[in-house]
Amino acid sequence: MITDGLWDVYDDCHMGSFAELCAETLGIDRAEQVRSTLGGRALALSAACPHKIDAQRTRIDEEWHL
Image (cartoon, rainbow, N blue to C red; front, side, top):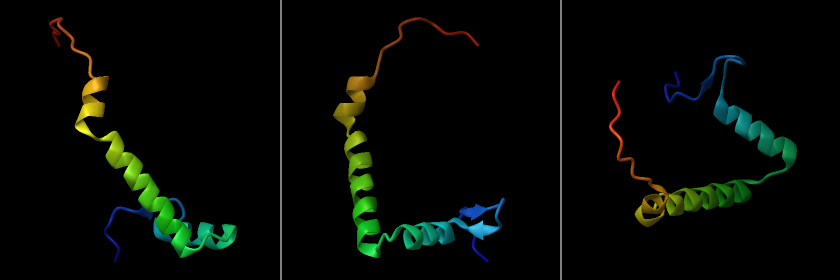
């Protein structure tokens, strides 16, 4: 049983199967998949750099009451 949370409840299939189907249908080989994954990871890591996050922060001085 797969318990990684990537089960598609609508089609009753693991989402990895859809990735393989798309790759096969579109002619995307494993090397291209890896390059895409690494590129996406690099973008995510660069976006998470503290100096970039700090530049997007805005200080709110008002008190908020719930």
